[in-house]
Image (tube, rainbow, N blue to C red; front, top):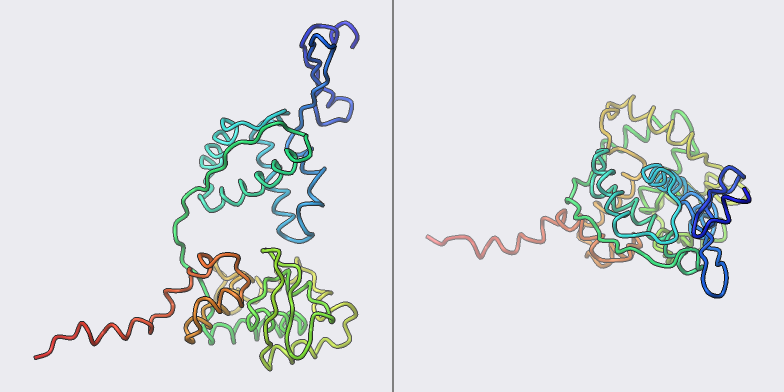
Length: 308
């Protein structure tokens, strides 16, 4: 390695020595300065446990960053440029990613790079511009669909049936339901501490949600702490296929949260209270359900009626 590394300004790659960064010797009047360049996957392993809680979202982040690193061909960098962001977005579009999916992947990248910048690993940050997303259709379960699906799930596993009841009546995310602990339950209310927004919230429980919890009294940490997400999703998919919903890609466990929100809005609950119930950071997130409050416009009808 000796003679090659003595050349002025020449970089060499240490990945063959089990490292994931390059070292560049830059010569100045004061002597050589060592500058390290990092791959995205290297930064991810360094900060993933600090930035993201355990769960499915963390697994998704790993997949996102690995894909972006692959697009960049494992390129090591000292600064992440706007050109690199454009390259990633362009390639993701060619792969068929929607703007919503691109935004999720760029959000993970932005969070990782901000941390690396704060820690002095990279010396500049690119500009991230949110891609315009189309207002997609929100799928929710009608009562009859819920009855059929839940019945099929119950025939396979009582615990997972109870979890579904709890999720649809509280609007909790799957991870929030599994993360619920006995100390989080007081006076027929559930408090969710570990949330996507980072802010805790407390919601009252329906009688059947209380029954679902009480049925798990023997559980040690929390009513649904023993739920295995992979097995739960397998049972969910098997049950929905049995009841004729197998071809509906929108009927995933998260549909229970949408169902809770839709029932609140259609039942006349004002949008601000729905925001508080769901724990949305912004009202814009909750406004996706606002169109379901169709009866709010009925007061306009008399104005439009022509009198004979």
